[in-house]
Every structure is written in C-alpha cells, then in structure tokens.
Length: 123
Image 1 (cartoon, rainbow, N blue to C red):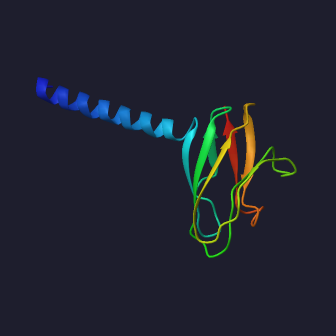
Image 2 (cartoon, one colour):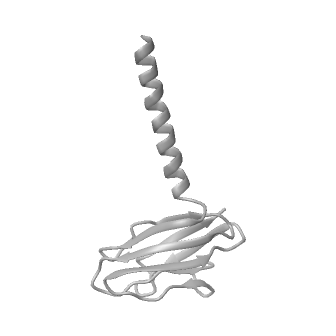
C-alpha cells in the first residue's frame, strides 16, 4: 500500500467514524427528535433519551386524521407522563422532561392506541 492510498483509506475511515458518532448521538440523550405519523403509523418504534433530559419532539402528521404523541409509564396507559395535543395534517412541537428513572416507557397516539405505539427508553 502506498503512502497516498494509506492516507486516503485512513481519511475515509475517519469520516465514517465521525458520521456514525453523529448518528448515534442524535438518537439518544435529549435534544430534538423528529417523529412522523403517516399511513396510520409512527416512523419510529423506539425513542431513546437520557434520564431527566429536556425532550423536544418535532411531530409531523401526514395523515388526514388527527394524531398525537402521548407518553405513559407502561402499556396500560393508565398513568400519563406527557400527553400532547392532537393535530390534523401539519406539524407541531412537543416539549417535556423525560422521566428521571431509567427504564422502558410506552408511547402511543391516543386516536389509535393499539396500532400506533412504541417504546420510550430512558437510560
């Protein structure tokens, strides 16, 4: 391997490592989460955040029916943590504080509570 090809290979590997690091960081912690409802389904089945993090969800509803994002302690949905307002087609932003206790929580659309669901993992 020539010196020039070694540097090219190293540069490509370094760039890939940086991209993977950015993608990994964007799916956990606090910060902004993009969530979309389309075809009566969420585009994510799992959301990961840090315990006690400030969470902002940019929610896009592409369907012609109202949807929302609601977070509960578990799948019985008897104890709410956060319930976002319903929106028809359009966009809204939900902001709340993640639970301070690590664990797996439950999110859903309250219009479609059995089909639009997911896990909200707090670590």
